[in-house]
Structures are given as C-alpha cells and as structure tokens.
Image (cartoon, rainbow over the protein chains, first blue to last red):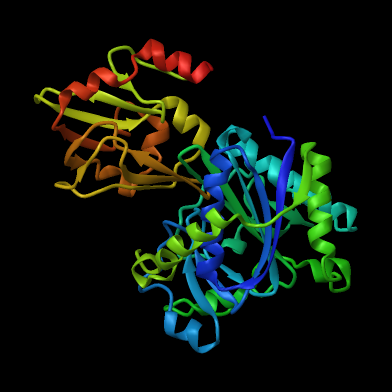
Amino acid sequence: MIGPTVRLLVDGPLPGATNMAVDEALMEGARRGQPSLRLYRWSPGCLSFGRNQTARDRYDGDRVGSLGYDVVRRPTGGRSVLHHREVTYAVVAPEEWGSLSDAYLRINRALANGLRELGVAATVHEASAGPAPRPTVRACFRDPLPGELTSGGRKLAGSAQWRFRGALLQHGSLLLHNDQALVETFRSDAPPRLEIPAVGLVELLGREPEPGELESTIAAGFERELGVEVVPGDLTDEELERVAVLRPKYEDPAWTWRR
Amino acid sequence: MSEIPDGLKYTEEHEYVRETDSENEFLVGVTDYAQGELGDVVFVELPAAGDTFGRMDVFGTIEAVKAVSDLFSPLTGEIVAINEALGEDPALVNSDPYGEGWMVRIRATDPSEIDGLLSAADYAEHVDA
C-alpha cells in the first residue's frame, strides 16, 4: 500500500554527515505513516561508503581530503559513490511499501518515469546472470545491477536501501556528470584509473538542467508511477532535533572507518 | 511457499530460535521467508562471543544486494558462539537458513522469554497477513 501523499523535501548542498543524519531522521516519520521524497546535493563533495563496505586501509582518506572532498559512511548497503556533480534522492517510507525488491523496483521506475519526461532514455536494468556482488572496495558505478537505473546500458543512478524497525530508506545518486573514475583513484592500492561504465544526465540531455527542473521532473514521475500526490514540505522541529542527535554518529571516524 | 519447520520458535522480525542440547542455549538465524525476501545475501555482520544483548537489541546486520537489514536478538543473553562460516560464505543463509546458515548461539539469561515467541503456526499466520 502506498499512502496518498508523499512529502517533498528539497535541500541545498549540505555536508555528508548532515545529509545522512537527515535521511535517517526521516525514518521516524515514515514509521508513523509519513513517506518522504528528499532531493539534495552535497557540499563539500563527498565520498560515501556502504554500511558494510571494506574501506579502512583500502581507501586513502588523506588523499580524498587533500582534494577537498569529505568522507562519510552511509547507513545503507552497497559500495562507494562520489557525490559531487550529481543529485541524490532519498525515499523514506513505511515498510509496507513493499518487499525489498518490490520497493526497489517501484522507486527506480518512478525515477525513470520522471527522467523520460525530460527526454532521457532511462530504463530499469534487467536481471543479470552474475553472482550478487559483495560490499568490497569496488566503486558502486562499476556494475549496473538488476533494478537499477541505466541508459544505453550505462549506469545512471546507484541506489541502496536500509530497513529498520518498520521503515525503509532508499537513497541513490543520480549523476549529472560521470566523475566516478575518481573513486578508484582514492583507493590505497591506487589502481590505474579505470573507465567507469556510467553516464551523467548532462551528457544525455546535451545541457545542464535548469535550477529546480530535475526536482519537479522527479516529483512528477513519482506522482505518475506511484499514484501519489507529492506535496512540498519542510522538516518538522522534531526531525531537526533528531538530525542534531544523529549527525555526530556520521561525523565520527570510528563509524566512517569501521571496516 | 516458504518453509516454516515445526518445533522452532519465531519472531515477527523473521528470525527463528532453535533449542540445542545445552540447557538455555539457542541457535538464532533468519527464516526461509526472510532470505527469500532479501535475495542473495552478500554479507552478515555478527557480534563477538561474550557480547550480551537485551531482547530486541540489534545484534548484527545482514546485507543482500545493496540493502541492509538489522538483526534483533530474540532473547536476552550472551553470545556463546557465532557462525564463522558466514564470513566466507554468506550465501549459506540463502541455501540452508535453518541449518548451516545459523547466525549466533545465545545463552539465554531469562529462558521464560521463549514462551513469548511465535509458534510455527503463529509465524505462518504472520507471514500470510
């Protein structure tokens, strides 16, 4: 069952730890039946690790920092993403939105729906025959996985989910430009710079999206695909307090470099 | 249709509790239904032997393809062993959830909590609901 209204939150660029704290804080409202679609950016640009990804001694945090990027570990699964010239979406909803695979597909279809309206040939990637990848050091955008958003076989968005006490959080990075090869250069073993088979919206559109254009397009895609009304809103005072409580966890190197 | 063996106890969070030969020690894992919903399990994070947990405390996480779910301790007690094999082969959770895919062995400090868990029939109803 999907509720009749979804709150739309559009945030300006924020630090990685704040972005993760806000996403987690939204789960409390979702448990009480308030789904949210949040669209946001990052400042400074930020390398994010998956919840269980191997990163300690495998990524060079000093090198990342010297180039002006931040580092954070997400509460969701998957592998590393560079949040720089991209837009991140987060969907937070009651668990009743569907099983993991159902919700994953639905959300990605809603994104694809919006992007197609914009003129982008976005599709949901079909199942692959390969084994499921472990949360290793590899960059997220190296491998398009079943259910993910692609265009012409190249990955356009990398997404991951967390389910906790009756709520689900799915967030993902929708590329404007494909800078993901940088991720591999942050590795301690510094492998030769690789081509990452991803693609950004700017390449597909042939232009930069207008301010607010992506946000309204994506919201409209959710309305059409999920049959919901997307209503602009703000964080509640309670959620802002929760963000302040959660932020230190995501700022703590013990969390970021836990594995 | 997922397998729900009789003789085990279950939680609404899709975990099972199996009695062992040792008094007050139980094996805990996730159900066949849970592994089916998750899909291919790629990582299981477990506590260390000696760690203690209250009932419904988070004792670990399970990651399927890019989705993380938390594992909740069905009983209050101390971890006496973990299934080391899952480090090498987390897919055992998919192939044999009630056997080789067990996760932790817990020594319950309040064994009466067992009575509060679901029977196989109750759990089947919960899954169908």
